[in-house]
Amino acid sequence: MAKVAINLSTGALQQEEVIVGIDLGTTNSLVAYVHPETKTPTAINDLGRGTIVPSVVHFTQQGETIIGTEAKDYLITDPANTIYSVKRLLGKSYKDLGEHKDYFGYKIIDDNSEGLVKIRVGDKFYSPIDLSAEILKELRARAEHALKTPVNRAVITVPAYFNDSQRQATRDAGKLAGLEVLRIVNEPTAAALAYGIGIDPTEEKTVAVYDLGGGTFDISILSIHQGIFEVLATNGDTYLGGDDLDRAIINHWILDNQLIADTINSDKNLSQELRLKAEEAKKVLSTGEVYDSYINDSIKCHITRHTFESLIRPIVDKTIDSCRMALADAKLTPEQIDTVIMVGGSTRVPLVYTSVSDFFGKPANNSLNPDEVVALGAAIQADILAGNRKDILLLDVTPLTLGIETMGGLMDSIIPRNSKIPTKAGRQYTTSVDGQVNMKISVYQGERDLVRENRKLAEFDLKGIPAMPAGFPKVDVNFILNADGILKVEAIELRSGVRQEVEVKPQYGLTDAQVEQMLMDSITHAREDVSARMVIEARTTAEQMLYQVERFLEKNGEHLTEEEIDLTRSNIQKLRESLTTNDKDTILKAVDVLEEQTSPFAERVMQISIKKAMAGKKIE
Ligand code: ADP
Ligand code: MG
Image (cartoon, rainbow, N blue to C red; front, top):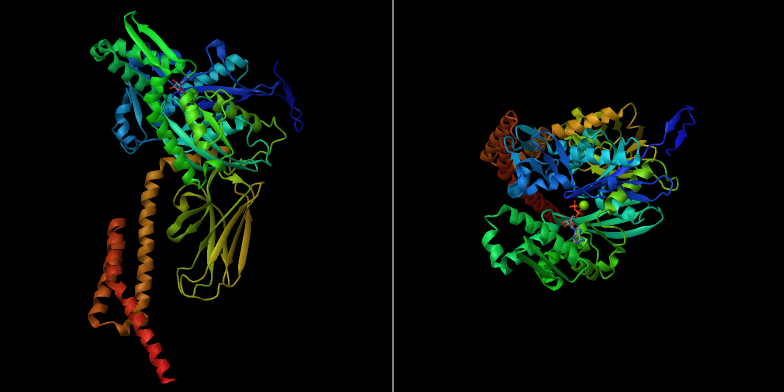
């Protein structure tokens, strides 16, 4: 029976709603929830079809969409209309795919290499977001059917290395599937949560999450303290996984059996059968010692655990190399890892388990189902967000980046979006003009590179900086964002101690829809923003160079020859002209010329003043 809750402030009755956790995987996806009575995280198994939904979308001739196990059956028979591994394409452009374009059996459109990829099926075009949304819709439908309640909200997991554009694409896919995505959670974080790590805020732990899936391998090193999950390092291989283990078996059978070798290239059904048999053999060998089977009662498929292990050892060793690199990046030794967690179906292979345990010097945790562990953790996170766990501190994140305006109207980010709050960050700045006694601090919020595209929160002057040459004052700007989302900005000039601060409420007056729009804009304009930023940076460099060289001529012109002064003036003029082009390369080239021509001057002037100083001493 569904529970009913009363909103105490309005007196209204409200249906208690489930928030689900979703593992949107490259090979397989799952949806899970925390059972309201038993409080146990559970993967949903609708109609006894199993908890795992293969991440495959098939479009039938009749225009229907099939998801999951049934769709997987079409991978070999109808590859052009069957989309797999769409997660690899999320948030990517055609250019991003690089050498891996041939990996996909379906048509990826390359008409616009800068924009996000599109996939062609028949005469229709789909984005990876559309296709991921199809998988999410299926998961949502299964959850609604199994739980007999509407499901409108979810937590979705992504790999720790996913960038902003990939995370946004995942969010958008959720939206298209009719889900409000309450949070995007890192897969290793979810796995740790599923093992109960991080639930107690006083606990401090360093955790390694080893995730070997169908086609990808990730190792993540997490530091967990005060309920905060910090990713210390990630490593892995986006094209290494269980599929490679299957392929190793197939290749072995081809070498071992002349009949297979002779027919494999001409017989499509045989290669399909071999793939299925190889995966079956691999799974059998995860518990058994030998696999024996026949294709069409005539082709014998035989392999022992011993042979299998010798075939896959190089693959497993490669993953251990990645673990070594991740630890080096995190500046940790294997002994400093408190807990190792196994994630992904391929960690069921005994050689994988023993190799990982040996490397870290302790038995890895695999008590939870490695296929389900990420979805279970997502469900726990969802339950926390639903407010069902009053014992857990709910950590909020800032939805938009906070920063200040720097030279040329550029946004300098100080607290990046998605930072956990409370948080504190700061940066040091200096003056750009000699004798500058005031500094304007303008605080902005948003994801765009130019402040004028972002939202201004506050502005104040740091007054009373003692007059010093440009570049001498040291101004610390600190952002302190407290747990209520109030931002305090303080600026201090360290040499004199002058100090000024303001307080603002970044979220004030911003609706969710506006935050969303700001994030969307940052994605659509990402490329133009980057080129605008590069031009502004070039201009700023040029202007600083001009300022310095002109000041040098004024002060030290007496030490230069007539020709040197003329050449300097002519190069200054050229640099000024380059600024009118607004072309970063032209500007930077002119900066280079002036820089190269004038750089010997500084040294000469220094020599002269040293000589003078020495001469002075002699007179004394
Ligand atoms: P992903 O996270 O990439 O979506 P999964 O974690 O679901 O992938 O892992 C899928 C892989 O796990 C497949 O290659 C599958 O063959 C493999 N796998 C599943 N069960 C076993 C098993 N019992 N033994 C070995 N490999 C397995
Ligand atoms: Mg996975």
